[in-house]
Length: 258
Image (cartoon, rainbow, N blue to C red; front, side):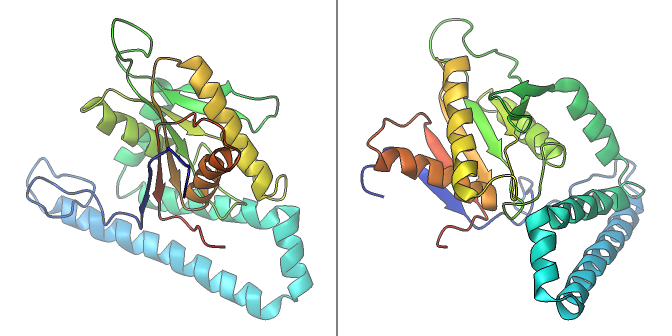
C-alpha cells in the first residue's frame, strides 16, 4: 500500500505441478511404463487421506469434548503446535512406502544444504541454505538472486525440517532459470513469540541476507502464515519510511486481513 516500493504478489496456492502438456502432474513418473505408478499414487493418496481424516476427526473430537480453557492451554503452552508438527511428519511418513523417492529426496536435500546457519542470537534464528551453482558475489555483473522461503503453520507450528523439501524443490526449479540461492527460514513461533515478534524475525533475516549477499536481489516467498508475516515485514518498513531491503515479496495461500 502507498509508499511501499516492494512488489508484492499474492497467490491462493497452486493446483499441482504441470507438464508442458498443461495437465497436472501427480508428482512421480513411471519409467517402466507399467501401471505401477497408478497403483503407487492410489495407495499414497489413500494413506495420506486416512492420516488427514484422522487428524481432522481428532481435532473435532477435541473441540467437542475439551473445555475451552483446556483448548486455550494447549495452544498457549505450545502443545498444539507440537501435535500439529508430529501429525505433519506422520502424514509424510505414511506416503513413503508408496513413494520412496520422498525419503531419497529428503536425504539428498539434507546432504546438499548448508544447515542451521545463524542469522540472529536465538536458537530459532536459523536458515537452511541451498546454494546456487554460481555463488552470489562471484564473477562480474549482477549476482544470482536469493530467495528466502518463510514457512507457514498458523503462527504456532511448522519448522525448517518440515519444509526442507519445499526449499530444495524451489532451489532445483530456480537453478534451471535464474540460478537462485534458496534459504529456508526458521523463526520463533507462538507461544514463544507473538505476531509482531515474528515480523521482527523476518526483518532480521532479510537484513542479514542483504549483508551476506550484498550484490544479490533478495526475494521473500511466504506460505500461509509465513506469507502474512512476510508481507507485514515489508509493509512495516514502508510505514516507517525505510528503504526496502528485498526486491519482492510473494505470498502463497496467505491470510492478510485479520
